[in-house]
Length: 283
Image (tube, rainbow, N blue to C red; front, side):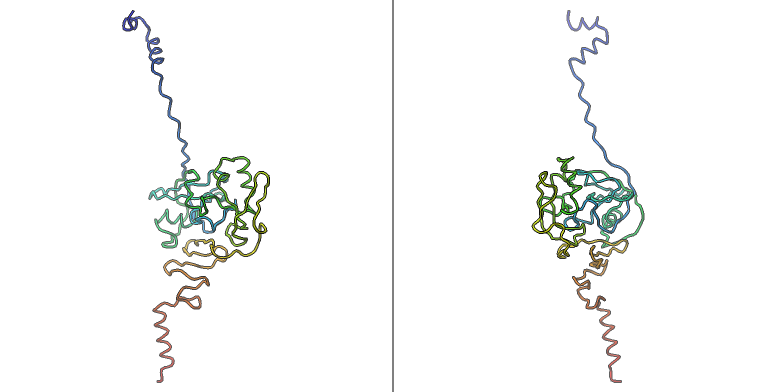
């Protein structure tokens, strides 16, 4: 009997089954995990890192301080301003007490489109969205060779050991470098790399005594941008380095044209000359 003739006698269910056997249905597409969520973001003006990431080796103007715990892989997020659509990528290397804080400069850029040192603004919580990114997406924010996560040899071992033991394929476990720097704002220690023979040893070996508390050379200081003034200051000393609209200052804390901490502007100089002329002119 021909296929056409047979089809006259087969019930509909049999025909459907026959068609299903001949042409399998395509497998459903794998679901994409969307980590986007709405947050109310606030500015944060003092760099810190609970896992010991060294501020002198990263861009401290692009750091997220989220309430959730820090994992060995989820150290990079993207934040989008809900109204303007402006975006930034942030390193998530510290934990807040409940707020979604971020570096003041990043917050200011998302809100105004400008750096906090250029056009500082004040404000409270702002609606934004955030999503997790692959850690490699934030590589440009890490200023070490190979973009390895810079950790304190003396203070980061608990976090690092957890990554090496429990998440050996994570970004941190495969991309870290230890330094003999004692604190996250790089004010004490020695700027030298240390070696870790894991798992044989659970403590790093440094060229000099690990955890040295000597004042660190001020070659690569960590800076904070004060909220809401936009002043750029050294984190270790609070010395003002940049004041919005007035320019840079030198290593002594005074401006290039300043002798005693008060800027000598052309108008001030003219007033001074006029005052001296009036005081000493032989009337």
